[in-house]
Amino acid sequence: MFCLSRVFILLLVIIGLNACVATRALHEVMTGDRPEREFQSVPPGKRFSGPILNITAPNSEGWHVLKSDPSGMIFARRGSAPGESFAAQVAIFDPPQTDSPEEFEALIVKGAQADAETERFRTKSFTHQFTSARGYPCVQMNNISEDTEARSGPDKTETLIMQNEHLYCRHPVQKKIGFAVTYSHRGKELHPGFQAEAHSFIEGIQVPGKSGK
View 1 (spheres, rainbow, N blue to C red):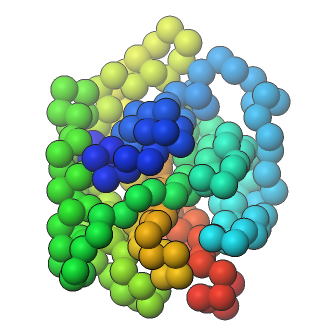
View 2 (cartoon, rainbow, N blue to C red):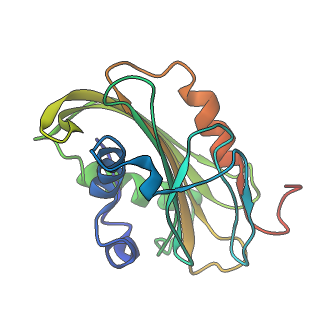
């Protein structure tokens, strides 16, 4: 599984975990024995406006807010199959200072590859590309891996498949900060609607005044 704890220095303070562990922990919260009533539910597609980012919740039923503060937001929900879960995150991070798009992409990817947890995760696919489609520098990243020690119940671990779609961007106005958007699914099978859902969530995260959203 590819993550970015070396790039996400601020996230160690923001959520007390590196990016890999944070994503995994979200899934394990939702597959544990805590009742859903302990989490704040959120209506599909609810918009949260802010000075740095406008964040739109995933546009489907069953999502809950696990974290909401100036450093970002975390949404999660349980799936319909045993042990299945979804997570959607937005976080502020300290982006690498670079002179070119190629260098920006290379540093983001280097951080991801350096943090591959090979003892627990077996990476099945990993792709990345630089994009300026939003009018500012971003790196798209997609990976599928097998979590060989997934906690799918209070006293149960098994091998589950993790799908992750990421977008890492330098903020176009406050250029000393960046933001990361991640949509993730974990379950026994690949989720057929994953790409469409991930794209919808990522497109719902916009810089104020930089889009029509």
